[in-house]
Image 1 (cartoon, helix red, strand yellow):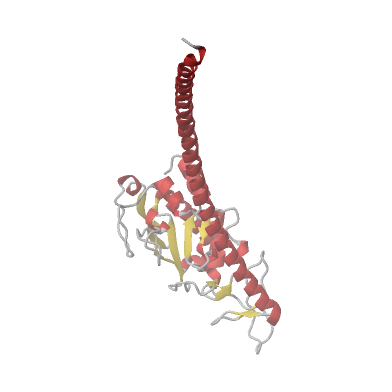
Image 2 (image 1 turned 180 degrees about the vertical axis):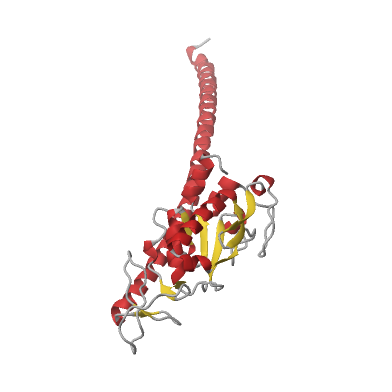
Length: 299
């Protein structure tokens, strides 16, 4: 056979060998790529889950920051008005001196009377220096309450209902505390008793006029179709003085509640007067206190 006649078959053989090698190489590459791709997808899914958690946490932080900014804006507005006029007047109350972050509002006599300090009435309405209260006390959010105490019941409405969670129900009782009778979590009642005892000793007149608009009330937060009120867990109480409730969201606070708030704060309760919409009659057990009770096995 001539040499030229062998070239064709040799070229074909070489081509077949190269094709086989290329096919094997591509298969190996694809197999490796599939493994690497799967690994990268697993990592990407984990990163996405982590980012979603971070986004949720960031949203919560932004909501809390927005609430803080709104509260600070209210404070600045009040201070600005006081600096402009030299005094601040709350509708239906006596004229008050400007307040600082460390001092509660102090009433003075109307301008057409002698300039002397009047004796404050418990229900006299004051302008509140919010920064003075709730220091070191965290308002417990819904997810914190559910983490610590669980769901009070399966479904909620806008009116008061009973607890259906047997574990939580076992922690609740109705008790007479000083001049009031209220249903709450047992350790909250113990804490409330200490507050009332101190009030009787330091402010006997205020003690005698102490009343309540209720403690336990399983319902949604006013205006919400999802968030559960902390009254639902038996950790909150609404207070009234001399039979009168403090006005909700009007920016004013009964003088007697200022005195009460100091006692509640010392027991680790959060005061609703510093909410974005002021709710001065409302007191609830702070997050730190709840976690302490849980660590002690009390809840």
